[in-house]
Length: 250
Ligand code: BTN
Image (cartoon, rainbow, N blue to C red; front, top):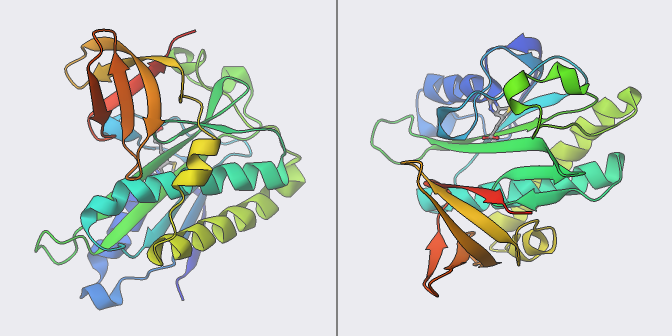
């Protein structure tokens, strides 16, 4: 059994998860099932090393320490299953219809209310992935001026009775564990992911690491979680989450 750590404030729950994994003497010591939950982060991180604004409100910033399923290449499917689990937990406790913007952002009422960051960690130094730090940040009851100005147009929050916050954390843990257990047994979350997709069938802008943008239509999500994009010239491509971000065209 893993441990449950609760913090009022921390630098980053993912960094704490990585510290716990790194402090393990052998991979066998890694505390799988451990969960770290914080009310606020002072150095919350998003994809591509971006800052993830993590103000104190009723928001939940949490990280799970998971055992890698098969090869390190499974980290994208961990993100996929986490996105489904977050939607399920929001639906169960706050209601509404959260939707997934490929690959790892949860939207509600056209605003991003949650980000997910799965990081493989090698404790042994061999390069093999010994643990996964799965970080989930859900904005809850954050007033619009509670976000830094530069993200106010995009960021939003789930409305929830503050008394339900603990129930939400418990629900999220249960859903992540159930979906991860399924994934470990070869049951894919991809069907549930597709059902909640915000991008399939939409016009998108594909943004690469060098900043170049290309217009495309998101035709579908493949079984490995990659996104099938068809460009205006008829060319199509499977996009992988590590290199790409998306904008949905209105
Ligand atoms: C993104 O939107 O790019 C991903 C954001 C992931 C945020 C969560 S909050 C809990 C965990 N700790 C972090 O520093 N990041 C993740």
